[in-house]
Structure formats: C-alpha cells, structure tokens
Amino acid sequence: MDVKSNLRHINDRINEACKEKGRTPDEISVIAVTKYVSPERAQEALDAGVKHLGENRDSGLLHKLDILIDSRPVWHFIGTLQTRKVKAIIDHVSYIHSLDRLSLADEIQKRAKKPVDCFVQVNTSLESSKHGMTKEEVIPFVRKLSAYENIRIAGLMTMAPFTDDEEEIRSCFRSLRELRGEVQRLNQWNAPCSELSMGMSNDFTIAVEEGATFVRIGSSLVGNETGGGQS
Image (cartoon, rainbow, N blue to C red; front, side, top):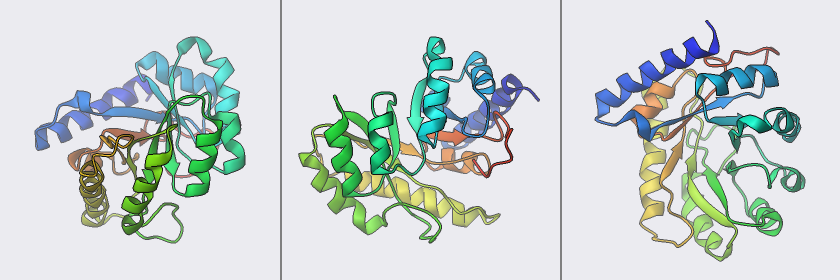
C-alpha cells in the first residue's frame, strides 16, 4: 500500500483504540519515523497529512531539512543524542525524545536559544539494550532540571520490549503513564509533563489504550527502504 493508505489504516486502528478507552483521536499525534527512507518518501507522508517527522541521527535530519523545508514539518529527534551533536540539531527540532542524563541537559541548556520541549527517556523494561533512566531516577532528575530555563519537560518517552506478550508491553506503557502523574504532581514550573511518547509499529494500539499522545511509526507507515530495524 502507499503511504496515504497506510496512514488511513493506522488512523482507523487509533480510532478503534480510542473508542475502546473513551479517548478522542485528536489527542494522539502520529510521528512518521523517516530514518530509513528517502526525503521523497518522507514527503509522501507529509502529503498524506502527517505533520510530525522523526529522525534518530543528526545526518538524516540535516539532509532532509533543506529538501522538505517548504512543507514545514514538525521535527522530532527520537534517537540517542550525543552531547557533541546537540549544536547541530538544536535549532531545527521542536522536540527531543531522548533526554536521559544531566550532561545532555547541560549541553541543551548551553546551546538552546529558547526553551526546548524534551521528553525524559525511561527504560521501563529494564532491558540492557535500551537507553533511558530507571523509573526511580526520574523524579530526582526532573527536580534538578528546575534550574534549566531552556529545558521544558513536555513528557516522558519509553520503548516496550519487542515481544508477543501483550501484558508485558502494556505494563511498560502503564508504568510510564503512572510516572507521568508523579512528575505532574511536582507542579514544577518547567515540567508540565502532559505528553507520553510511546508505541511503534508493532504496539501503538496498546500504547494508545494506555495513554500515548505521540506514537512513533516507521515501517507500517513509510516502509523501510534500507533494511533497517524496528520502528
């Protein structure tokens, strides 16, 4: 199927998940993960009605920026962000989904010209292959960020295990939602923490049922032109 048909199918599934949980579909934004596809394929997603694009490498982001400039997508940096790469991407993205350490916060604070919406990345599955903080580390970390005027904690982000065990996936998403509530109860000036970035091609409907506001979808939406991994 083409991207427009893929998006229609994805939106239908989001609508069903929302109906199941009494949510409205306009609470959820689809991020087209374009790291494994060409700028032309990313443009197809924008033409189909997607507003948000996600890249996980600075090179991929910067390559597509100039080509897609007239379409004015909302750019999300969704991959692990090295501190030395912050300078290259900071003026071009609206959201960073991988804030997971103080050294990275220091660099964002230093390089940003205005507050940047960031997601604190949480390793809810405790898998050694995944980046992110433990749940126990999040509240102390957010408290420290109260001194960072250029960082706004928009929400939390996680990745569930790649498994057929639906309850294991659901548990990861549920724990992130519960942790968001703890952050919100801090009433910290720069941590509204209203968003949840969770759910990919294989599990986004479960994520929506558990409260996701952003889902990051690659292969099911734009395909995979380079043979890369899950998204």
